[in-house]
Length: 101
Length: 292
Image 1 (cartoon, chains in turn cyan, blue):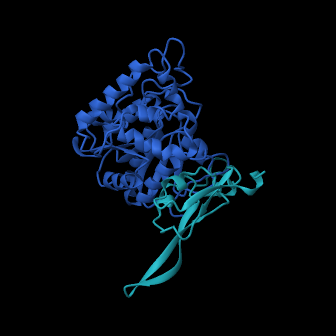
Image 2 (cartoon, each protein chain N blue to C red):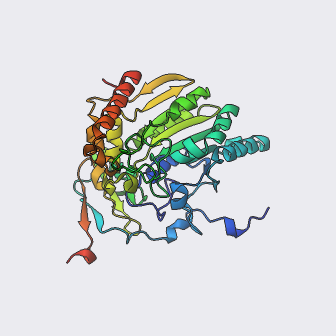
Image 3 (spheres, each protein chain N blue to C red):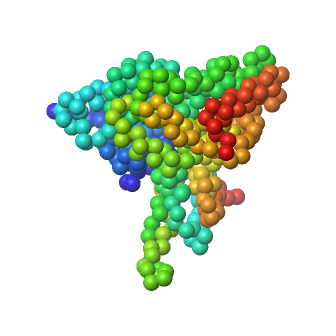
């Protein structure tokens, strides 16, 4: 069966709409405070925060991954939910450079 | 693409619908067929030529999402492809409680193997805040405007949980976007049952409720902590779990941060409505044993 293209759009084709320029503020992650817990990743409505592995450390003879939150600024709308839910207050909302007077 | 729902959708900043959707899809590991009636979610996720979905997705008209889902379930059974995924409906509160309630009742009655999720933002927010059956009393909407005589909506929020329970379906639950791990657990539990399942998730709306974009989670949490939105779970008609509240807050705390309830603090009939809302909250707390 052939389905015509008129009624069907491809999965994840919304990615071509870059929503990063919607907001006035951007989240900045303080890497020292971030514990990589993943709360912000669970709450981000735009799927633009990811907790990624940045290195490894040895704790009591076991190798443990160090994880930090990473923001994809191409799609962040600057709602500020991540800063609100962060348990260690590692995320701060900063005014974008182009809006600074 | 961990969540099977991509960036680049058109939701307002701080919208809570994607939070609910992505956690449901994450819990199901993307093994599902999604049916979505008209509403905010359809507008934000499937604009022309763009789709944010990473799972099979069909948009139906406002009233027949439950019927379309029932059809998909019947087709999967007939083709012997039941193992490919669960049939999930994401519907707004208007499509669930007002327009699609007939088809929903039929689907519950025939007990199709469908997980029906109602994303409850308490009005028709897609078209700009018109009252629906799930709008709470006192809410200022464009069809129930607060004026000299009327203090917002008159009446009560429709009890869709009781409606679902009356059909004797195996699993009924409520949840709030403030607790995504709870949503994930409930979805995983729900799909273990064979038959119709109903989960209602509270999703605060930034523009309709008049809150800041970073307050969505705070408001969703307050609705639960004031007992206006009890988090309950029924299995085979029996109440198995509730979310207990440590120190129940007065409803004013929830009302005063929202624009849709702001008039209640000045309106001559406002006090009456606040007292009624407090009475509803007390009733909920007593009925489900929410206080710790």
